[in-house]
Length: 437
Image 1 (cartoon, rainbow, N blue to C red):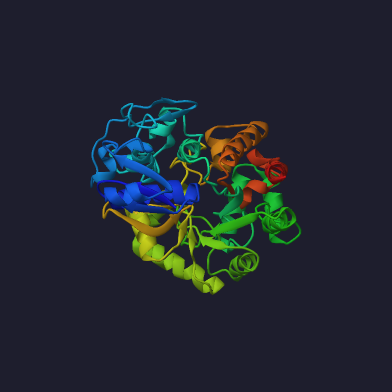
Image 2 (cartoon, rainbow, N blue to C red):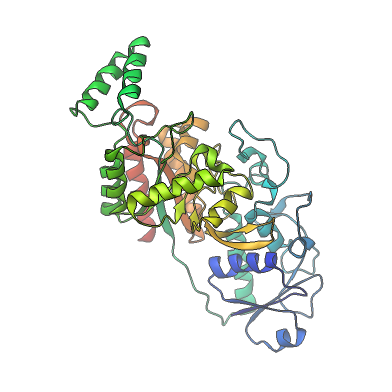
């Protein structure tokens, strides 16, 4: 057990320390504001305050964890050995910055509550983040900081035996459109044929016809193969289904289609199925609730996992709505424009609601990279995409964290810009599985 002495115990402080020590380093944490109790404790202990009590393990505090509300904070990033840091403190501190204030700033997504320039989908972009601007977006720096602090604690308490967590890989699949040709209904299918002819895409016209006549498999139908990959390589694979009405941004099969419902049910028989809330649910609690109930009615199971379509988040409203609907885990924490760690951690953590200054029960599960990011936004080749994915996986392995990738069912077809991605996906899985050997 690790005892923390601090002059004041706040929700921000307990939230940050529990992520840092309990979830990353597997240490039980207790807090005290009583000097006598702290001095009497014979085990691991840290002082987190403006001044040390004596010659104990001391980390000097900045005001952030003792404040409330949002302020415009000046961030100056500097180097700490081979990583980055900010919120510098005096030489009295064991480390040169307030690692806990910095961790809270990143975990709470403090910068996303401040004014920023949105992209065309109303999103906070990677390029607006301090992590991107200062070159540490591709590093889970909070986990790196935690392990560096652990090393220093080990020097101070050499007799203590720290636990080690296990690296984990989770593959997540977003189903924006289950099929490109099948089960679209007469009007949408006729419109597709007409568009193929008017644009002289005769090959597309012919392939569409063969698929509708059940003479060829739909190019987006990679579900059996993905389940086979899960079984063969023993990896967790979660599917997130879009079940909204048709809109400009939401173009899945009609949720009333029995074949689509059967697909969702069959996937749910083998792995976890989550909700992919549609484009306009970002601030629409009623629409989000309808879609959640709709998916629950299909699989006859409560929905506990979610990931926003287009990765659209509005802090704190989107997450507040998920909390109200008792969603347990959200997988939206990542960027569309660039790979990396949006909250600077590869460890699932809880949403801290800065409007009410409380830790909520909603667990945020960050992903590190997405297929569309690498191929469309960054225009990487398959070879460079593989190298990037493995680089990120290796960073996560160094701290035995949770590595999560985001792909789409449509990515694994033989045509277009994602040709060869299917082989690359299995190559990634095989390479990651070698980490455990």
